[in-house]
Length: 279
Image 1: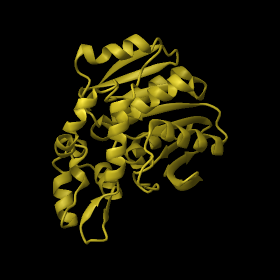
Image 2 (image 1 turned 30 degrees about the vertical axis):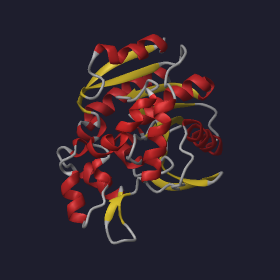
Image 3 (image 1 turned 90 degrees about the vertical axis):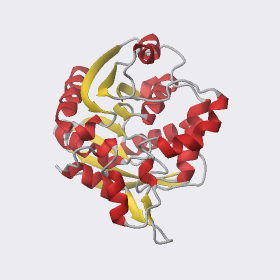
Image 4 (image 1 turned 90 degrees about the horizontal axis):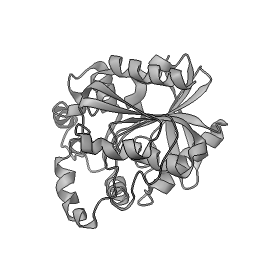
């Protein structure tokens, strides 16, 4: 089943989202930093018969609006709750990757009634970061693999050549090529670059530094997916989740941080199995 691209106007922005509207059970899919909704196309197709699925491009990403500021977690959560209200959803199951995994944890802490369950796919930056680390951000912008695809690039071919070297595109499947093509655009200066903006990057990194992801115990059924080549491979990295998520399962999965792109078949089965137990 192919998703339908729709737009929701809210406050100062428009949120673009993909919708698979065949099943009845609400399911919200949240992409990570510098990605967009199409990364979930394999999972959406796999689950479409049983769920009403919505995958938004978060503000500053994909085809959604790109304001110059206002990238706080509170604003992102408000966007999602407004989108849910427009859909008539009082509560939903959530699958959230990387940076949005931290957003989902904060959301579950603040408004647990809106989340029926949550899947955190290799979440990052779950702690409040020391303020002195801000001086390292320019270096991180250069070396973090999910930011290397931002550009600028002198040609589409140069952008694709860079993408083929990145972890999220290992294997260069049809799905990965579609994700790459949907996330890049020709800029007004003639260069090519990501639809993800530097304003969103800077605003989100600043917010991540200032806000802790887990601060009190949460009873919402939760699944933490730990890819074999992901960022949460050490026991100490799992401690905050074990401490604060009181109804937690941890599942290892093949692949890297983007296991839904590099190993989608096994990833889809893991998600389906967990969600079924929550229905």
